[in-house]
Image 1 (cartoon, rainbow, N blue to C red):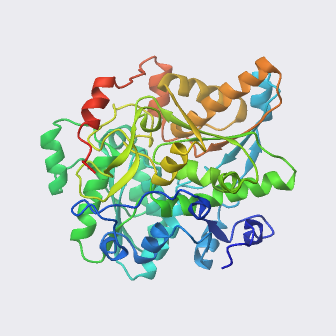
Image 2: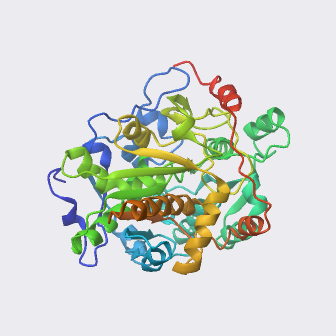
Length: 455
C-alpha cells in the first residue's frame, strides 16, 4: 500500500476504517526494540514466533508500514458495533457552566463493555488463520478477558484467562461473562504454574498484578502445543488495532470542521490512549497540526509521572522480553484499589518514546477524585463509566473548569473506554466512604526500581 495516501481513503461511507494506522511510521525516533533477556540483543521475529502469532509478530516489529488493511472477516465483525458514537457532552457542559466544548468517543456499546474488542477480534482472527487450537492471556479488570473470550467464541478457539486476583474477587460477574463465552478463568498468581508458585512464595498473600498474570499466561502458552499468548495492551500491534478509535473520531470531527485543542485518554498500558490519539499524533509528528495530548493515570500506579524510562521486564516473573518504557519496575505490585485495568507497572514503548520526546503530557489522579468525576458524569450524561475511563473524565472536567476561569472556548475530546456496570463494588465502596487514596511512597518505588535489569 502506498505510504503517501491519506488515511481518509481507508474509510467507508459510514466512516468505519478499512485499514489500521501505524503511527510508528511517522515517528522520527522509533520505539526502542524488544531485547532478548538472555543475550540483551534485539529480538528477531523467529524468537517471538513461539510466543505470539506469526502475523502479529510482523505487525509488532514493523516501524515503517503506515497502513495495514483490515481483513474482511474482522471488518464484518466490527460492523456489529462500529463505528462507535462520538458524543458531545452538552449536559456535562451545562452542569459545569463552562464555555468549553466537550466530546467523548464511547467504546462501551458492545457486550465486552469496552474498546478491548477492537484488538481481541484481530488477534483471535490471526490465531485461527494460523491453525492454532487456542490462546492464553491475562486480564486486569476483566474487559480484555471478556473481549477475548467473545472473539475466541466467534472463531471457535479455546481461551485460557489469568485474571488479577483482586479483580477476580471484586468482579465475579465479569468472570462469569468470560465463562459464558467458553473461557476458563484462573485467579493470578496461582498454584497452577511454576512462575505463579514462585511469585506466591516471594509475595505471600499478594492480590496480584498484570505483570504476574502475564507471566502465568506466557508460561502456559509456550508449554502447550497449539497455543499462543495474546496481550490486550502495551504492545505495538495492540495500539495498531486500536487506531480505529482515533480514525473514526477524527473522521467525525473533520466532517463538521471541528479541530480539538486537546485529546485526553486514560493510561494503563496504552491501548486506549494510543488508539485514540493515533491520527492526531500522526499530524503532530508530520508538523501538520498541533494538539495537547494528555495521558491520565492512577496515582497508585504512576508509571509515566513517577516511573523511570528504562529497559525492564514486561512481566513480574521475568520470562518475557525486555522493553524500553516508563516503568515502576516489574516487581512493583499496585495496591488492591479500584483503578480497574490501569494496574500495569509499565507503559507502551511507543507512547513512552512519544512522551520522552515531549509530544504528549501526563498527570496522575487519586482514586476518590476519579469516582467523584465518574458520578458527576453519570448523573448528567446517562452512562455509568468504567473506573479506567473516569480518569480521563476527571482530567476533562479539570480542563473544562480552567476554561470557565479564563473564559476560553476550548474543544476537549476524551476517550470513554467503556461502561462500569461490572464495577459496582467499587462504586459501593466510594458511596460508603470506604475508598482510600493509596499513593506509593518514594521509598517503595525506589525499592522496585532498584531491581531494574542492568542494560
